[in-house]
Amino acid sequence: MFDANILDIIQNHLATSVALFKPEIALLITFILALFMDIIFKKNRNIAGYTVCIGFIITGILLFTQVGVKENAFINLIAVDPFAVFFKYLILISSLGVCLMSFFSEELYSEGRKVGEYYSLICAMTFGMFLLSGANNLIMIYLAIEMMSFSSYVLAGYTKEIKRASEASLKYVIYGSVSSGVMIYGMSLLFGASGTLNLTDLATLIPNGQIDMFPLITSGILIITGFGYKISMAPFHFWTPDVYEGSPVTITALLSVASKIAGLAGFIRFTMLIFANDPYLNWQIVLAVLSVVTMTIGNLSALWQSNVKRILAYSAIAHAGYILIGLVVMNELGISSIMFYLFTYIFMNLGAFMVVMLISNKIQSEDIDDYNGLGYKMPVLGALLVIFLVSLAGIPPTAGFLGKFYIFAAALQKGGVWIWLTVIAVINSAISVFYYFKIFRNMYLRGKNTEISEKFSFSPASIALTVIFAIPTLFLLVYYSPILEWANQSASIFFLK
Image 1 (spheres, rainbow, N blue to C red):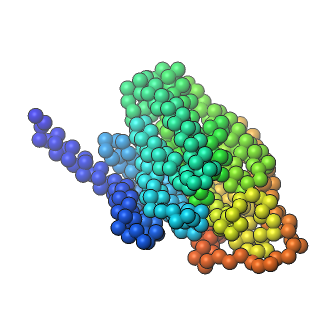
Image 2 (cartoon, rainbow, N blue to C red; image 1 turned 90 degrees about the vertical axis):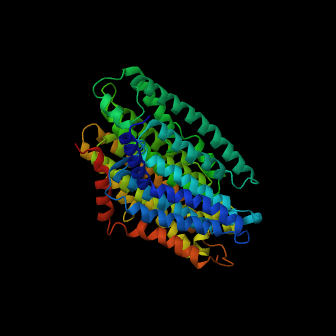
């Protein structure tokens, strides 16, 4: 028979954990409610989408109550801290942006397709990404990745009557299954060597040499494989171009932004608690090499692409390489620069995909040659697309420049050997200008003299949403200090003694 005091402790801990879990509970309720609303109100195709959007807003309000909190829930399975809250807000903004984009996607709404499950799956994926952001346990990391992956597999092939969508979904499942298997094997090795699954406990065992070198290094490499797959890091990026090209544009945007952000949240927490304390291997060198390989492969491969979605896919790979620079230095400035960079990345990337989707609605193509002269048929959206591409290239005065500036500054401040890493990153940024320029070259310089029979018309709401994405992309440079300060405060949890 249990002691009454033990039962009281368990009940109190459970009550505290549930209170800390309110944003995730809101997402679960939203998921179930969206399914029921879609069944009840069959004639309203958007009812599930509206429900999910409202649920995301409520989740954001509940998440605000956790600002400044630093607690652990469910016996240290999940950390509720400023770092997790920051990433959850990024994920929530990304998912909400994709849901709003989806209302304007003819690709999704064609053929009388039901979209209730689509919005519900985005909500389910967001729940998995929330768990990954705060996961403080190896098994919780794995379960969170699987939860978000299962939803993304279905979403990637949601337009199943399109051959390339089914192909994308199948490739995604195969690559995802292999990476998950490798990752869980690495976790089992680490558990076998340490006897614990908790990251905080591992962080205290590793510096003292209480874990043998071989299982620690081997498990680290295998776990990097799993995280590398989620963030499109080379050489685990092979799925990215095909899946991005075959998926609906909205899901491509979701995978390139929200999924990457969640993967990075888990990877950063694991790195700062495990790799930063490893007495056997300098993981900074490993991550630096992966950073260089990732950004170089992404940028050089993008130069030869003719499909705009594939260009943006390789661009996403290159950006993963830039982001890794902040992780390489393993200090507070490096982590906060990643967080600030990701905030800017949300708006410029979602904005670019929004314009690509609206163009695809009109011309039924994503081939770059079909973009000839489009800048004159859609002057407002053409100008907005240029802003997003310039920001992705990291050219001032856009937010993308500011994000890269802080990433590079973190490496330069570290000095010494990391200066070469910054030089390579700057060269890669210069290379990226060429393939971004290909898009607006076709829009404005090719087809310039052809007769423009009519201009494209777009709904005011779609233009308004694109402008919303453009405002922080263009004007964040003017007033960025609150976001940067928030990132600094959130990153500091790994460096408080």
